Length: 624
Image (cartoon, rainbow, N blue to C red; front, side, top):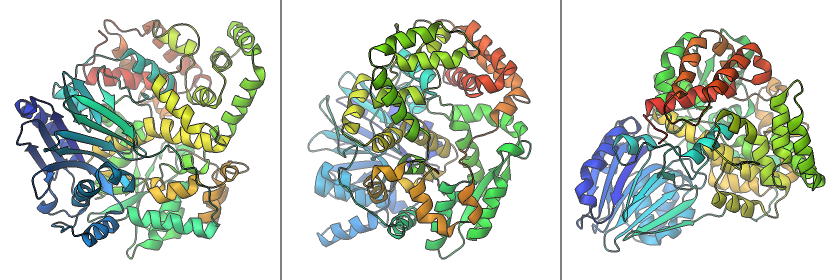
């Protein structure tokens, strides 16, 4: 796991200092080594920060240059099938000098070109320069676990693993993108491929980009979904899961598992224990001052049942308050969900881990969210309403009953276009279009605010066309919520502590197997994730099967009313800056509403604004 950066273009060599600055800003991503490379023609400069995980010797240092000097690679990630690919390449006559995966990536791209990318089972972002062709290849893994931010200007392209690095190195301007801001206010994270900064874009998941002489050609190298259908018994699925976890345990450094009280992390822990010859290390956070949201006892029971070496770290509001500023500075883009990952990553690093396995992806693949039921119902309702929906939306907007916020969201949904994608977007958003305009007047015209780019909407529509509803929701969850929030937070908050977070549920063969199953088996009725429970349930503590689903959330509502109250109030005032489209009277009214009626308002609405204000100030972003 690492950080990569670079510039390609006619004057790249003159900007080697900028690439060095980009690398310096990402030292936390790679404390084990720093490297740079300049092409003989001067048309490309690459930078690399190394977190050594596989083959920790200097032989695997990067940027890595091919034996003939023609190609150079800067690579961030892990390839879980690198041993199999290495043997295939070796059988074809390739001689390897290292025991790591970076050399396998370089040789595979040399032999097979971009056709190698679909064969990579892992998480990665990479840059490959071909000196003879004068071409730069950039690519991200299938699900977008590793980020890659781009700036194109004047026939040149600059890239880095973190948006903040582009800002601090002076490669990107510090202007806020209004559409991205609207997307954040709607969803609590910034929808890609745009970013919160004008002129900076995020390379899409499963996408390769070829740059040559200023010409940019992006293409998706892996389809959004497989059309192949298959059936698996519970035993066969359990074996697929075990193999995926085993692959994700490959490491030359201390590795453990994030363990909560729920099914996802418990499944990883028990399967890791089945595959490991030594006790697996597990880690959980506890919140002793808020017992209602503390899963430490359940995690302890699972660890005892599985037989792991378990560490429990208590977190208090006082401890949170001391780390809030650092945590939000670690965000690569504003997010309402990142603090929990920052805390558990910090705890993992303090426990001596360099790699930690996470349950990200289980809810999306196996039907763990209520969206798998709600969204198809909403789409049917909107379809039946037809022409009457406009009347219903208008009537709802005029009702000012006990809960105007709920009425506003109903009105927003009924005013949206018909279809499963708009129903999903309506269900996932935390504010309606009208609420966003009340909060930030001028961020959009009248009517439905989509909150994602038209190109992304078209791509998602094409991906889910003809899908069973449960399959469509799975694809949308994987792409939108997981891609824009969970994976982004896991990367930046893990790497803030030089911790690599791996997601075994996103293993390529496993994901293909689960997405190829009958969609009806993904319905979370009568229990969430019935397939996963059927496959792994016999290995787990009996009591876990009957536990209600709880996400890994912090007791922020309690803390915001107590020890964090002044901190959050002060943070909200950071939004009061020149040129801001955000209405401070609306912000202050929302905060008062939360304090007076916490259950009705919800902590997430003021919290995301607090994070936004803190993030914009920390990164010195401006509105004009």
